[in-house]
Every structure is written in C-alpha cells, then in structure tokens.
Length: 255
Length: 269
Image (cartoon, helix red, strand yellow):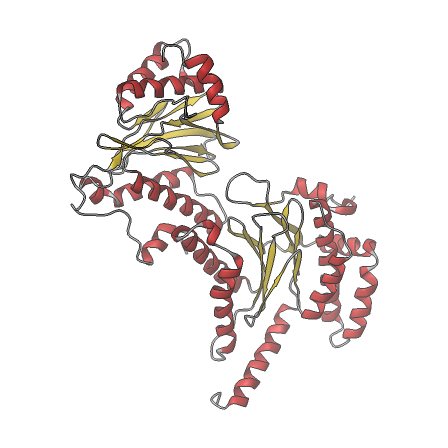
C-alpha cells in the first residue's frame, strides 16, 4: 500500500544484478562519457554513444541519456545491462508511485530510489560484474529548480551544484568544465541553449580524442551524441538535424 | 445450509438484489472516444472516481470507495509488474480484466459467506491507432462487456441503455463534442436514477420522463447546473497528442470551462 514498486517486485521474487564472483575478470560491456551542467533555462544532460568490451567496440548507437519521467533524466556510465535495468525499475517506480498515491514522488524521493538500487547492487558492483555510476538530473518542483546529482557505485549521492561528469572519459572534460565555468567568457549557468549545446558537443569531442572508450561524432554515419534538456516544461531531446547543424558550424573546425 | 443448491441460488439472488440497491444513489460514469483521445466523465462529491491505471489505460468506477480502491490497486499492480516483466505494449485492458480482476470479482460475488465487491468498473483503453480505442465494463458479479466508441456505467442496465441512446444522438468527433455528449448522457442517467429513487416502483413513469429529457438539452443542462451545487464535474483524458508514454491527464477547470456547453463551466450569476 506504500506505492513502492521495487518492494512489489522483490515480493514476487525479483533480484537485481548478479551477485558473486562469476563474471569477475571478464571483459564486460562498459565505458562512456556522460555530463550534465546547468545552463540558463535548466539542465543539459549529454552522453556519447559508444559501448565497449575491453578493446572491442560493441556498439556505436547506445543511448545513455534516458528519460525516466517527464521531469527526470538518468545518464548512465558503467555496465549497461545493470544500468538499463535500474532505469526500467526507476521508470516503473515513479509511474507506480504517481498512479497509486495520486501525487508525484518528490525529487528527493527519486534520488533516494536510485541510491537504494545502487546499494542493492553493491555485491555485483564490487565483484566487477555490474558497477554503475550514473548522473541523475531533474526538475525539483518543490524548490522550483533543475538539479544535478551524481553517484558512486556504492550508492552515495552528491549534488553537482554547477556540473557533474562520469565515465572513463570524464577526467578529461572535468578539467575543461572547471576552466570554462571559472575563466570562460561567461559561466555555464549563463549560457543560452545553443551555447550550452555547442559546449556539450565540444566537451564530448574532446573526451573522444583522449579516451578510446568514448565515441565521438561520426558525420558519415550521422551519429551524434544524445543531448536532453530539463526545464520547467519537462524533458526535451535535441534533434540530430539540429546537432548536425551546430556541429558543422561551431565544432567541426580542427576535428 | 448453503450446501443445498437452491439455498445457494437463493443467497446469490439476495446478494444481487442487495448490490443493485447499493448503486441506486451512485454517480454514472461515461467513456467516449474522440479525435483527441478517450474521455472519461462523471460528477463526484470530493472523492475522485476517475484514475490512471497505466500508460494507455484509465478507470472510472461506481460503488463503495474502499472496494474501488482495492481493485484499483490490484489493477495497478498487475499492469506495472506485467509492463516491467514484458513490455508496456503487452499491458492491455482485455488481458488485465479477463485474466485478472473479472474472475476475482466473480469469485467474491459467489462466495456467499464473504463480502462481495460493491463496485462497477469502466476501463478505457487508448488504441495505438485512431479508431482502435476500446472500453471494458465489469459488473459487480464479474461479467464484462467490450465496447468501442462509447461505454457507460449506471445503477441498472435499463438506465445504461437510456444513456447509450443519448450518446448515439450526439455526433462525436472533437473533444468539445465528446464533453457535450458525456455531460448530456450523465444528466440522462442521473435524472432517471433520481426518479427511480424518488418514485421507487414506478419505473414506467421514470422511463417516460427520461425519454422526454433526452429530447430536451436545455432541461439536461439545467439538471447539471443543479447538481453542480454539491458536486463537481470530473473529466479525464487519455490524450493521444501528449508526448511520452503516459497519455493520461485530467482536464483542469479552465479547459473544462472552455469545453462545457451552454456556459455550464461558469459560476452561476
């Protein structure tokens, strides 16, 4: 009667993740660069599209920026099998809560829901078979603000006051974000949607330059990163045609 | 004593009569398909009667609020577990009614030592394509019917028939037309139910009265206006134009005021 979908699933025998050592040492599908930062109208969340297993590129069309509900986005870094499962549980949990309790789950409640899933997944994460380090962004209606939180693989949550990054390519762009935000022409939070998009494309292109597990832009195949915006109006995805245009005019120089 | 078959039949008969009486003061529920989506409409005194069940499923109910809540939770659990384990597109009204709550309601109705569900349910489903919207109505004994375009719940089958006649007289394409048709049908049903309560036993007179009302929209609007003194019009829409998976939304007072016929949405001067 509490509107807890995960408890309902567990009551029916569901177990998240694969605990134990069975997969340790295997080349699991991983790697990523995901980022989120606050811009003038809300939060921008972006992610590259490459999935790798060891030296192999498994897939170049992965969607790592997942819309969980109309006002929340989870960007995933780590083992996609576990991350997608967590996203599906969260999506159903938020819907189930809203429909049973006849009110939206609070933003804080959503953050805790993801933290609980990560904690449940600790055995698999420590065994090396299911580590996930996501970024959760959403619109907090109670405080009338878009917010960013990032997590470690054990479930600890931290607020990204201005920005957050995760994944194998994140060390590269973390420094760039700090530099741009501190000494750039304007802080990230003052950027327009277009300026923020160009910034995200440049950051992900930089990450791909130094991290083989991050996929850059592939113009021949028409592959661009996934970029979503969270504002008071909800979640919106930038179209590939718009990304192509901005990439051609503002990013491709020197790439 | 219920081991004897005729005793059991008698007990079930008594139970049916008891349940019929429970719905007499209830508020009818109407479902109408239109180009915008599927509209559910009723009038309520505070406690809502229309609910979101899943991405493309909505519920309207009559009866005891506690029973309605219990069945609503059962539907929600079934729909969400099924949607998680398989896919949201595998969650259909037909499956969760036929293999889920209908057998449960029937069993409760026939177990004469236990309390039955005092509830009637209308489940609306937004089709994946226009023209594929559907409705399921479930009676307190577990019997269900599948319908397209329109569906209603009322105190008795005869009143539901009257309401369906009213709905057929209204051409419905737009949401505005759907709201108008639903409101008129609700007025027809509620008027007949109230007459049946006031003049218990004089069903013929009630039917004659309703027939007269069906042909007089002004009287129907007047009836609605009177009911709005202590009730609120409740409308929910499975909107095919809403982005994202979840299609359910309620019509807010401003939108309802624009859609309601004959200035019904405006406060009386």
